[in-house]
Amino acid sequence: WRALQHTSPDVRGNLELLKMAVQQSGMALQYASAALRQDNDLVLAAVRQNGESFKHAAAELRSDRQFVLAAVWRNAAALRFVDPDLRADREVAMAAAAWD
Image (cartoon, rainbow, N blue to C red; front, side, top):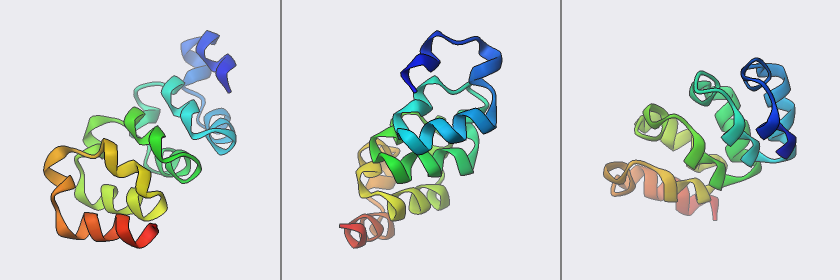
């Protein structure tokens, strides 16, 4: 998946390729195009594999309450990269605690 850093924008924008990459390592999300970092399914697949990959998701997703809930349900480690206002949200905190 690290080879993605040396690929063209066309490759980094290939949804099917990136889906396979994030299943191997969620951190492959960092090499996805800006448009793919906004793709709900791709980001959730990355988070499921590695919660820290959430830091590479589009800012809009990291501040969307419903999406954040879905992400921390899949991997509580994603909570570190959630918009600060949402980290204080009781339901978000409970979703993260339930994962552990």
